[in-house]
Length: 262
Image (cartoon, rainbow, N blue to C red; front, top):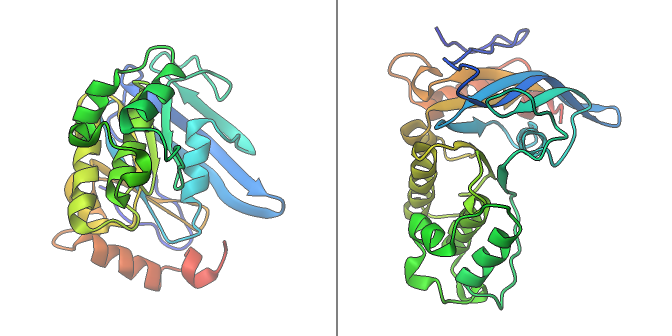
């Protein structure tokens, strides 16, 4: 059964993941900035087709964890293994698509030109027509990036992350600052991408949408994974995810917010 941790322990629930289905396996990684330990002995396995939401207070290490997951940053210790064969490490050229919190494509490029540019950086990318259809920008494919709304720019960023046809898509707060309608649209695209085969891991503070759309929620706080399992089980029976999350942050013994550890 999936349960929360107490203040003195971590829980890592093992989803039904086999070697054949695993896209990435994080094995006992830790990461520090100087004397500040941000992540401590974190392990996680993500399967093909999963939509995994990483949640936690600001400063809890979510963005660091996602950068480590992409291979863009190396952990201080531990191993990250990519691919179903299990023979790739953080030094591999594993197919990973990444959308950071801030992305600045050139304003003078059109949507199609932007996607073509990033597709050319990948060995076997998708054509821009496929991507704009998937993310819902087919009606503005000839519009310049500088003329896009904030929500459309986020969808473009999502398109950039998937244009290389990756096995793993990592998105750092792709819905930050968006209204409810556009937030739902971004999550729907993420759901469609995961259903097509890749694993999708995203960070989000929109807990109500996470509860509806994600297969798993991974709660990061106090340097570790405090919970990993289906959103419906985070707070137990008949307790919405947002209420259970607020209760943990307010009363938990080792949270980033209360303990000011980050």
